[in-house]
Length: 242
Image (cartoon, rainbow, N blue to C red; front, side, top):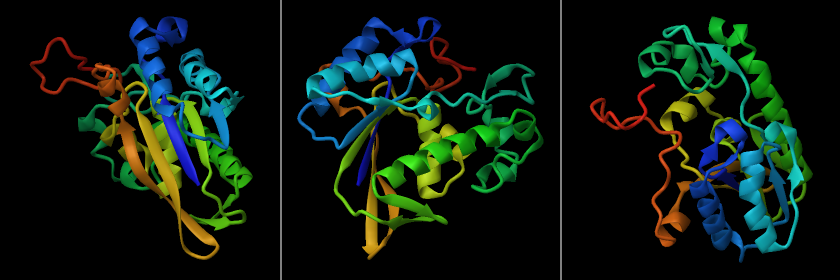
């Protein structure tokens, strides 16, 4: 079984849709995926993911099921350093790296700030939705691995968002979302592929085979949008700092 995860195109967050660039990226994604076969397609309820998915779904001649837990990760926090409200994955490195719990897959949501803003509960909602999806397709979570009830080579397509994608990947491979949120970056329409490995009969695990692939954009003569990244050096005044 393969999970093919696509981040939405360059976003117009104010209107929850895509920018002109985002529509071009979504069309190029459809060109990349239109010759693949998918056993099922799922999409976030948010407009920017729905708009991105539509190009591929039209090209495939199929529809997607909207799953509420695929929406962007919603837990906001009061940032302990800046004092402002921001998304849970957008922390200054000087702050979050000082807390050992954030590197622990079992303790990352147990700090005072995470508990105060119910971040762990939001993560559990995503974990539960993901476990239901993999079970539906034959792989039932059993501890930190998966019991194989219906082995298959199906590909399942998901359109969602960077924040929730990292929570999904963390659950599949047994990692802290904090490490993935701050250590990875999926550009708009980046494609990630996660496959099962059943090395002993009946027991499987998931492995990330490709993360953040934007080859379809380069093939279409485009460079990935800067969305989700921060300045490469502090003196790059035209790039996002905070």
